[in-house]
Amino acid sequence: MEACRAELTYAPEQLDAGGFWVLEEDGGIRGFYGLVKVSPDTLELDALFVEPEAIGRGGGRALMAHALEQFRASGLARLIIQADPNAADFYESAGARLIGERPSDSIEGRMLPLYEIDNPDEVSHG
Image (cartoon, rainbow, N blue to C red; front, side, top):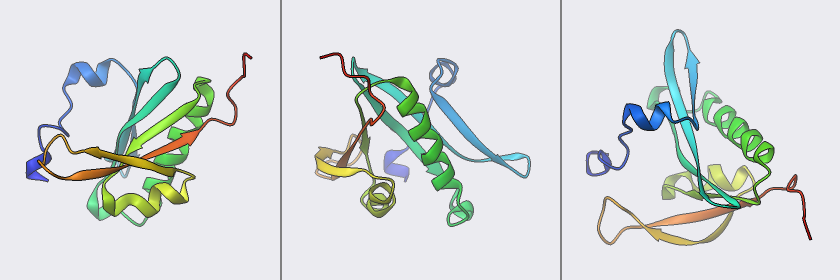
């Protein structure tokens, strides 16, 4: 995690710009995710993290379900997800399909799986 600190640090301005949601439990933040528009028809899941002690209690699934609701409501065609390899099963269980790899911004030579989810609610203009 230390090697990824810069990549995974969010400035207050980024958070204030919107697109980030938090999971609160027992008066504290237990997880969060962010969505960023990366092209006219695409959102990217910028982050989805749950505190280690909160893993396995449904928070990640709740965050992902909320992210998918936001994505569907956006009307954009696709959601892309750059995942940690250890989270592959999690994203696949949410309906994501592997479309390739992307190099890590933090660890030279490390490749990360890249997933995609299509928006079934996208309005076709054709």
